[in-house]
Image (cartoon, rainbow, N blue to C red):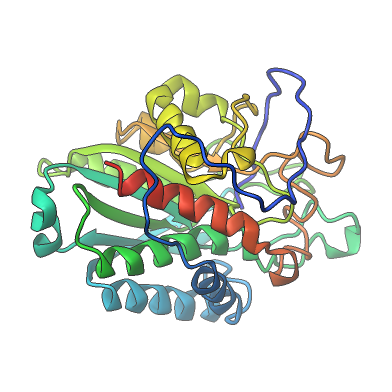
Amino acid sequence: MIKKTICLVSLVCLLCACGTTKKQVEQQPVVNIEFSVDSAYLFCAAQCSYGPRVMNSEAHEQCGEWIRQKFQQYGYQVEMQKADLKGYDGTILKSTNIIAKASSQAKKAGGATSSILICAHWDSRPWADNDPDSANWHKPVMAANDGASGVAVMLELARLIQQHDSLNVAVDFVCFDAEDWGIPQWDENGNGADSWALGAQHWAKMFKAQSSASNYQYAILLDMVGGQGAKFYQEGYSLQKAKGVVEKVWQSAASAGYGSFFPKQEGGMVTDDHVPVNDIAQIPCIDIINYYPDCQQSSFGPTWHTIHDNMQYIDKNTLQAVGQTLVQLLFSE
């Protein structure tokens, strides 16, 4: 996924991430709609079945079409926002942001007057440049966690929303492309400025230019939400730009019984798709992203940008924690 730059704000201790016991916190009425983790897991595996979804590859195009069809199956109006974007090395990237909008009929359900945006990136990193074995640095990443997990959670949310008409808000989704073409660690000559989150940058510019753009109440970015032992600390840029949204999501996690996965501690600042959503589109957007303060290989976990980011290391407990938190949030609005 995108080359994320983290600045530690404080020293924090990693809590045990393997517990599955839920402790109810009476902060919100608990939503009695169950997020199907088995379904989300299959959505994640389905994306990986195409192989690494590297820009300009056949696997990338085939998986993008599959994602489009799934959102349409769940009643969404889908736009394939195509653009030729220039990578850090001059490569022209055939990019497609997959924009899934709630149908007009769905937006009328429950008298919905506002919209919420959920987003994630769907492309794979072309280089495993953080792999402990340098022989793998030029190999593509399967991106089960760093990409596919976020899209999987969104697809399951879309499926649930179709089945339940009790939402008081409309929920749109965007799968950002060209997020992970940022300058690799082994390239000493490339220009890394703005080389990450290219699809999100393009989407945000197009969104801002539309006079009839939707007035989103807020947005949530999902990034690496299925890793083993993952915890989701409060990302620093999210706290700066959308602190109220951070507090609302973390409250929802506690109410849903998954507060242990969402420590109320800051986890540093991350360069990710939420930056252009905030700065260019001017939508308050937070980043739900894993953080491993005690992992020597990377604060994004041991599989980040390695050949080991595959389905073997996807944890259903983590997917469930994030998915149920969002169900609690959305159906409490």
